[in-house]
Image 1 (cartoon, rainbow, N blue to C red):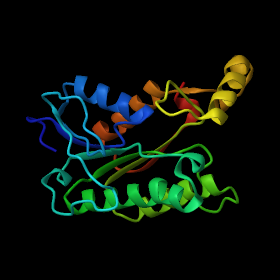
Image 2 (tube, rainbow, N blue to C red):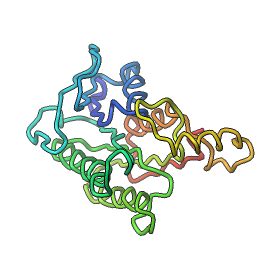
Image 3 (cartoon, rainbow, N blue to C red):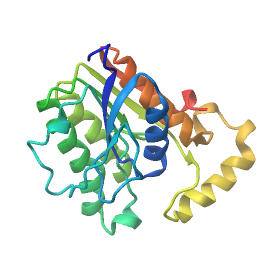
Image 4 (tube, helix red, strand yellow):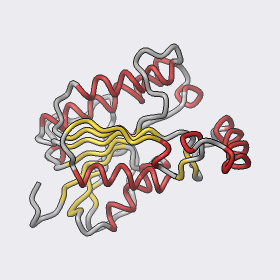
Length: 215
């Protein structure tokens, strides 16, 4: 990391709810010199932003922009949106792991993942198991600094409609003050701030940021 030039940040998932907030915060942060946000569709132009269009099934292994100082991954979907468990696993496990391995091979030493509360590779719940398997596999890549941010229900306006999350949000929003902190709604900007802080601070080792710290 070059302190004179600022941090070169790789952001994957910039078009999603949390990713959009990470992008906005990173572009506004003077510590960030440049952001590369590979995506399937073009992003609005910004002097600090490079946004190559990519197919996540065919990521370019020799792209210059893998040589980042830090990476943030906010890729994610739902089984309903993906269409099957296999498709969900591809988006929520295979794509982030492929990005992490290519970034690490390019010299990136810090990685922050938007994971989920309940992530556990041994869970009987498919969603939690996939999230836990990704955390386990990322830990084996070899990053100097690795952070798992584990929000509960994410608060904010999505481009896609998620009926289950919307219903849960109404209930949790009404019960908010009565619930334990870890079960309250986590605002997307707070999750994004935690991810960006992890990327910029680059604390050595593996770290977990629980939902109770994202209020």
